[in-house]
Length: 210
Image 1 (cartoon, rainbow, N blue to C red):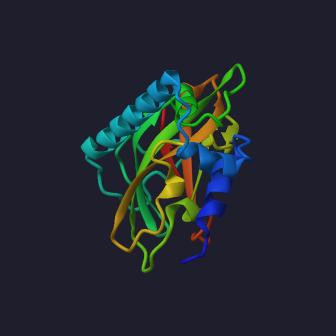
Image 2: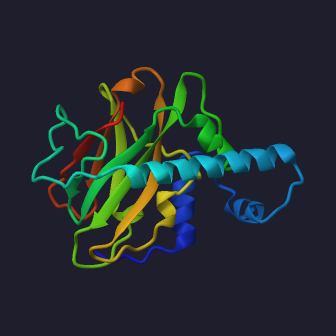
């Protein structure tokens, strides 16, 4: 499936989970010099964190997907184990259970979560197994399950954001971050649920995060 999805619309969707409605301000901020040493330091730290995430993903030797792997919630895939979802083979290669400071440092419009909650960020490494170019931000849907609760609210602007990947040709791969806003209680037991808009049978693949 090859859907037209303008970049500005994608950015608005990514930002909406954290209440980021000032897209024009965000665009202006990216090139604005505030003259603050603190802001510069935060940006440097966020960039360093993104580089570390990418390095961790690159050093992760992804195990090939096996048929039916990860489709049982009681037996989620481990870190660096790929699972197959319609049109994609995807692995989780890094997890930051409490990524709150990372997210806040990434963009001043990102909102601090309420007490008792936090941002959970994960790195996805995926390969297009379909017959046409596809955008993983459009095709792949993520949620985090903790006990009986499912969390789907996103975190705002991320380092190495999935929204920025764009179309991936058949056989080509991507590495990018996703993030979900969760309650802190029980986060060590969190499981990522991954599904695809291309799937007709609502299949989900599960990954152990905690």
